[in-house]
Picture 1 (cartoon, rainbow, N blue to C red):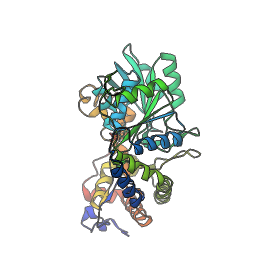
Picture 2 (picture 1 turned 45 degrees about the vertical axis):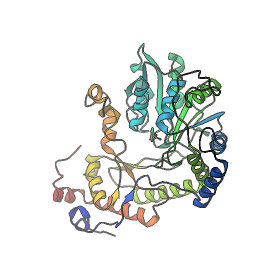
Picture 3 (picture 1 turned 90 degrees about the horizontal axis):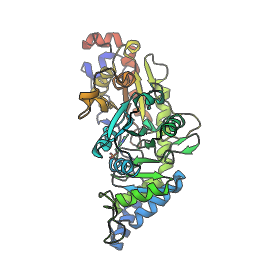
Picture 4 (picture 1 turned 45 degrees about the horizontal axis):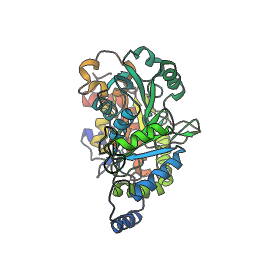
Length: 402
Ligand SMILES: *Cc1c(COP(=O)(O)O)cnc(C)c1O
């Protein structure tokens, strides 16, 4: 364990990790069980189009989430596009900028304008108090994002949506197996979407789902994900190819069997980080609400540069040199990415978002990270921030204060 900043790799020491420690290493269940499912799939000669594995996974997920309908699709982005179309989102939709770019792109791809709303700095989620002033005659909906798997202020958003006659839907890409007020995420608003991408808590290689309790929305989603086909030669709506393959669904079924062990590992890792990173001035670990179910997939710290003496980017540089490949989720925010940046970036429209995008850092966790790794990462952070003055001087970082 390094005890002085001279030993840090940014100052010429050997990296703490010989192999890189990644954010978002996939959680993979029983490989033999997956192989057996593939064998059965080949025996059935049925590789895609509403296959046995897809239907089984849809019904198991619907049960698990306590929701009437689950429609599996090929990824979380297509899930958002299909949901937006099926829910009648047109014109403008209000959403946070503090999310993965897919949330905004999915709307824009549908010809819907994403209108970026600031977040609540305490929860990192869309701030309901800021939504109302963004509503125009063109607004048709609100798209909340349950960032880090922590639910949006669903009640407040729902009240606004009802009062103003707007659709409310959620991007729940982070929130598989998480709850809100004791109810599983997946059944809130008109519909919710999930991503089952390899880096997400629960994966099917690539994949996603739309879940809803609304029979009509579900029916439209089912049609749209299969070119609008209703029957063999009959097309009744605009559609695309959003189908999930049997191989992906087999992976999903396999990983679903291991879900509780994934959660256990993530929760344990999170607790070790909490122990290692507690009470460091200027560093705050995003917490998970007591009494709610969480997947603990994201270990996110927020660096206050004034108190910590280093910026998030300084800390990130230290960690990367040690082979700890922490990620700046979500930097620089959708509003500073093409094609949205000309209208939104650097205009002071989203002050809480702009501060957050400069301060958050996502640390490695998941089944490939163990207790020793976490103790080392925590010690590196503690050493860097504990000696931030000396480190900043040596690195020429003293001028960076925001
Ligand atoms: C990953 C992610 C998506 C996109 O999902 P894909 O399966 O990668 O298409 C959308 N929204 C959020 C918040 C995400 O994190």
